Amino acid sequence: MRAKLLTGVLASLTLTACNNSEPQRNYTPIKVRGPEQDQLKKLGALDLAIALKRAIYDAGYTCKRVTDGGFVGEWKNLDMWVAHCVYDTGQPRDWAIFTGPDGSAQVRDCKDIPGSGLPECKILKRPAGSFTEVKPGTEKKAE
Image (cartoon, rainbow, N blue to C red; front, side, top):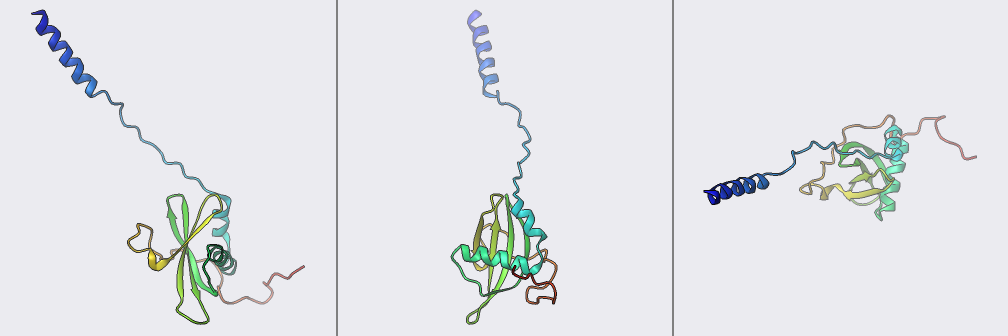
């Protein structure tokens, strides 16, 4: 009798131990942003074109002139931007620029984006102003 009781208690403890997991907790993801990411959103078209073009060149690519661009959205902790570049010869090219909270930038050719799991190179918000025209009186003069 004692053996049956002991076996029953041990079986019960064993089953209880198997289901001894802590309840799942809801974790709030931490969103890290850097001042550079916020500054890009405040730029006008011409200044944004300069910033995106510099990121493209720093990544080892070329861009003769940015004629369109803008904000695509957030992907993980990166902001995604698109720059439409035209060249003297050759086809225009769209570049995806991912800016990080540490001020870094990663550049990808938009033709390589489909199927990669990254967002589509579709501009959702364009900056104020024009990428190609400088209004008289708005140029910054060298000091």
